[in-house]
Image 1 (cartoon, chains in turn brown, purple):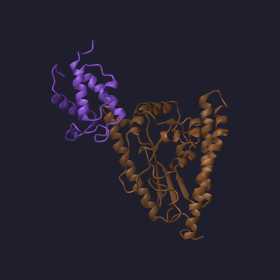
Image 2 (tube, helix red, strand yellow):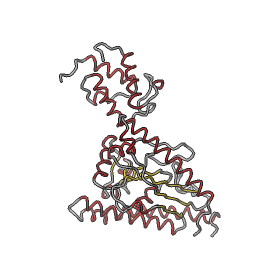
Image 3 (tube, chains in turn yellow, purple):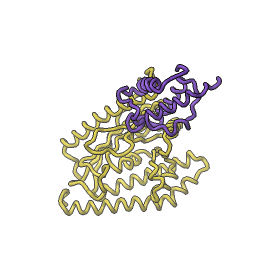
Image 4 (cartoon, helix red, strand yellow):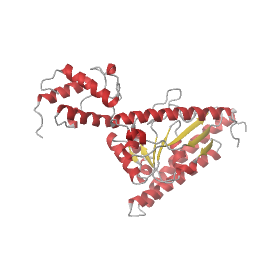
Length: 270
Length: 90
């Protein structure tokens, strides 16, 4: 099938709708059966939450496999082994709706911050509850909760942008990620996500599929040390601002390079 | 801070604090400037700001007293009101 022909596009609209329906149904079914059972499978909440998170991660791998098998996307993960260690503070840019799906699929046990709207979402509130994810309801409490999770040796994913990137606008990071890193005294593990042609981005409806099948590159970088920001004799709010600036610059360069390479290289077939 | 302070003096001092804590260009700090929307002071910053104001004024500050503060002008008024009261006993 011609990968950019009208027939292929129609197929991708249908298959995207099908995939997302599966996602919603799966979340509801598992959210009322397997996940609560796993959550109650141990009286130790840490063990129970870890079991739910591993199951969520497995279901995300199934979902990525489904989208790939239906011909909706191709992807490439670089440096996946770097995500294996526990207690990692993963920060990533956020171009598309399914970034967190990829990241959770690569990390068997990881905490996420889930926005208030999803806690009210009929499909997703139970899964995120059973998985012990962190709510963004409180400003100050959120930084403390994230730092506490890291201190316990749990891994955490944060999108410093706070929402998906608006294509064409300059990268804008909120300071929460830097505040968490400084509060937890934890280096940042950057993950650069690029998608070409862009799809499922902010302000774009799911059925507006791109002209050809999109390709994701998810590259795990080397740690960004925070020691120089901790040592600096400056108040913490200022340190958070400077770390945020450094982080934004790092991602700006990394995203530009990665996207540039993707567009010049021949995309992998299949 | 001295015993009698005009709102102008408080405003100038607040400008200094905002620059020192958050590197906010004093030119951007006007009475109408919205702390969150215009000056990008988030809830974490607010905690540090209140701590610093506590040191400077020598007054106990309840976060409640700043709950309604939205603009720099609101903050100046809140500090002004605070300074009308006697310092808290150590």
